Amino acid sequence: MSTSEKLHAPDVLETNHAVDSVSQEVLDEDRQPDEAEKPRVESWTPDGVAPEAAGSPEGAASEDAVIEAIATVHDPEIPVNIYELGLIYAIDLYDDGRVKIEMTLTAPNCPSAQELPVQVKEAVEKVPGVTSADVEVVWDPPWDMSRMSDEARLALNMF
Image 1 (cartoon, rainbow, N blue to C red):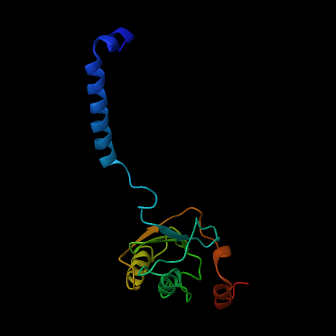
Image 2: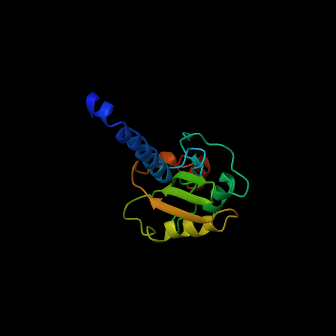
């Protein structure tokens, strides 16, 4: 709008301000929640690189309880639990009780490829405070024996 149009049509300018405020209200309704309103996530990785991990909130599952549950799952061909084998790459704990787990397998053609993720999901969902578990099998980085704990190496005589 040119300067002369603003001078000769002041009511149009006022109407535009009213439309702008209504438009802003509509936009505010659709906005994403502030960071404080989003569910907080607690993450864990075996490499010790966890983004802003804080203590577990009341009612949500603890990291230790989830790890204990995962440690109950064993590879049927290896007498060591999958946690000690280094197959768990990441654990994300959410305030609402959801748990996301990234795991891998010793090899892409692992005969237990179908059953191990299901066993991990079922074990974690039994932990008090867990509402659901999502287990994702990832292949990057590839698993190698360096990811095994000392306990697993000792059990398998792989020193």
